[in-house]
Amino acid sequence: MKIRPMTSQDKPSILRILRATPEFLPAELVVAEELLDIYLNDPVTSGYYVLVAEVDSSVVGYVCYGPTPLTEGTWDVYWIAVAREKQGNGIGRALTLSAEEEIRKAGGRLIVIETSSKPSYDRTRRFYELQGYKVICQIPDYYAPGDDQVLYHKRLK
Image (cartoon, rainbow, N blue to C red; front, top):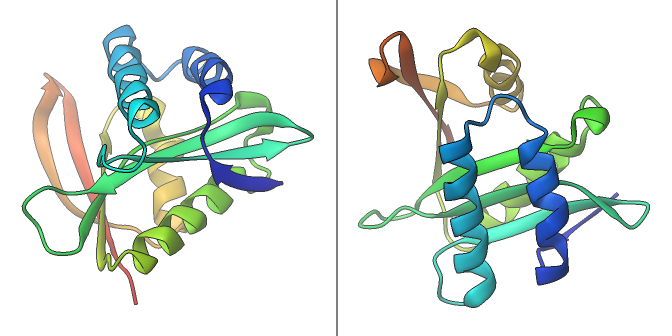
């Protein structure tokens, strides 16, 4: 497996992965694509970073992250997705560790991730917890009635 910065040739593969992930709603897919386009149009100053995981010359996952505006050393992980058929093989962990290392090199000290409380996100929340992220708050009915926002964080050493 190879982790590297995204190129424009990777976008169709990432969009396929996102569309095949049932947890993502159509409106969320629009936002994910917008962030990819912002990054691709200006990877140096966009404020977003995108890494892809490649196995056998195929993109099988990605992570999008960036510094949180108006903070000192706080970063957000906006999106992480791995092709359904490749999940459970350490790709998500490798993407997370790579993003954390890049954030650390850039002077990051804290990473924040938000996600849904819906049962369909149980595996996602368990994944974050296995990566050392801790729940710091849960906002009831944030996304929709019965769909809380669960906020995770991790301090970098």
